[in-house]
Image (cartoon, rainbow, N blue to C red; front, side):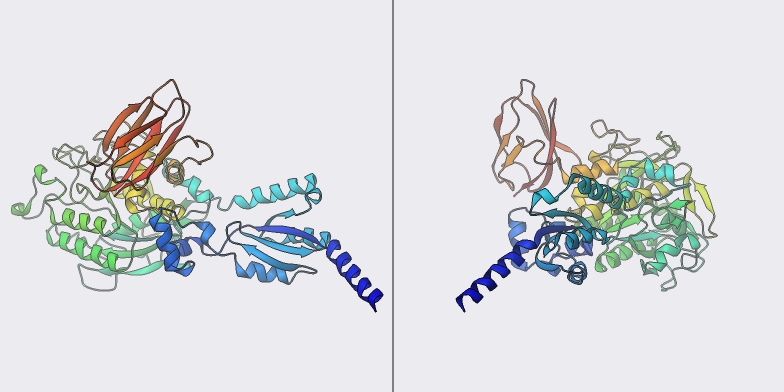
Length: 536
């Protein structure tokens, strides 16, 4: 009997040693953007509170491994699934070498790492790397007529990484949405269930697609949501949209400002992330109602005050600067004058200032416009499904709004104020803004890089602590004979502190600075770093 037991033990040990152990790394996770945007679906409230208390972001690593992938792995011949890791998006398996190697044929398997490193042959490593590289090319649109306006602001780079606005909701406030329910250029939008509804606040009807004497909103929407295979792609083809008619083209009266605020309130109640408004108000049919240039101070017009409240509620309001640049009026209108509004000017296809684009002035409380995009000869799809060119900041605004939706999908933990600041910081003349182009033409890929910040391992010597800070902030920078230039920006993009730092470690007294979120930017000769700083 003892000999039999010994034989059984030996056989068990032999069987266990004939099996290989490996980590199987998976390609992706399910509904990442939605899960991160709704953390209670993946974390306890206690975990969320802890992360918030220590300024720790909730990211893709918090999203569970796709259970469908695990189920499929369990069905494979000779494979036992022993453990899983959401942080690494990997599954630990046991099986014989051949069966484990065969898992690479599953389209959701990224690569395999054997516990016995000698089995990770170089030839197979090359094969797995090539597979990974192919799968990284997630989206490769042929932009056709919209190529210039998309590539000018670098949003094509986000699309290539599969950031196309998925999970972000945009409310479009405009004048008319004729044929949006039937246009072929918006078929993808409808097929994906991303046309969520709308309302006509002028006519008080749910029929937002009826003829209103104007199809301006249809064209505006197309710059974001339009898709015609190999001919046209909007800047956020996979975002979701509500359509609100607030503009009455038959007249120009202050009641339209009230309609706009009503729509913004509806958008807030629906959980909208972004409002795009290609509208502006300054003069009316009755001259007694007219604004004067001095009224464009960001807090006089009813619509501007309403836009500021929308911003306070966490909505990122994007608005066209206006088309008065070549008139005696010149400056931006309401609500683009509001401090809480991200105001968009226009350039031509070469990136030069478009003469019609409204300009900022010293009357506005913040830099206007914020940034610019192509608004001269912009490509749009009209209600008859023709791809045409149109002029106006009416189109540069939604081009940016859609781009921001794609960026926000990539940075789901960022606040709306942070998103705006990342876009400003990415722009072509961030350090030298003016009243024509504002901070310039943004680069959305650079904005994403800023949002993700420079990897810690690259510039580990840059440190700021504590963060959040109440009084004294400690700053540690790399040793250098050259000074490091520090700028601190508030959420409106204004420099509130600027100084040269010569020491490897220094202190800043932050006690007089208002509570809120700031961006700290360090620029040295051979390194740079941006930090989000919270002043408590």
